[in-house]
Length: 154
Picture (cartoon, rainbow, N blue to C red):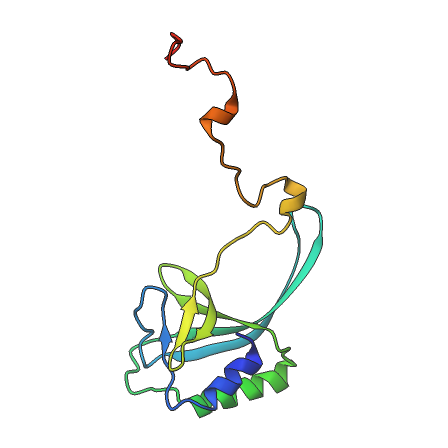
C-alpha cells in the first residue's frame, strides 16, 4: 500500500485496527511513534546499483489504555509528515515490536489494516544462474543407471 492509498483509506474509516500475520491485533491503545522516509541504496549480488524509497510507520504500545488513535488524527499526522519531510508517495513499511523489531507491508481488507509478512529475494537471479523453477526429472529419463533392478549396487 502506498502513502496516498493509506490516506484515502483513513478518510473512509471510523476506527483503526492493525492485524498481525498470526491473526492477532495490535492493541487498540497503540501509538504511531514515527513517520519517516527510508532511502536505501544498495548493490545486488549481480552488481546492479539499486535505490528503494519507503514511508515508515512505527507502531508502539504501552500501558496507556485510554489512548485511541482515530483515523482523522493519523491522517493529520501523515499530512504533516508529508509536508515536513517532503515524503514521496512510496510503499508503506510498518515497524512493530515482536521478539525484535519486525517490518511488515501494509494492506487493507475492508475494515482492518493487515500487516503482511515480507520476504527476502535475490534480485539478480538471471546473473546468479538460479532457475526460477527447478526442473522435475523422471528416473526413466536419466538413462542407464547402476541401480537398475538387475544390478548389484543397491
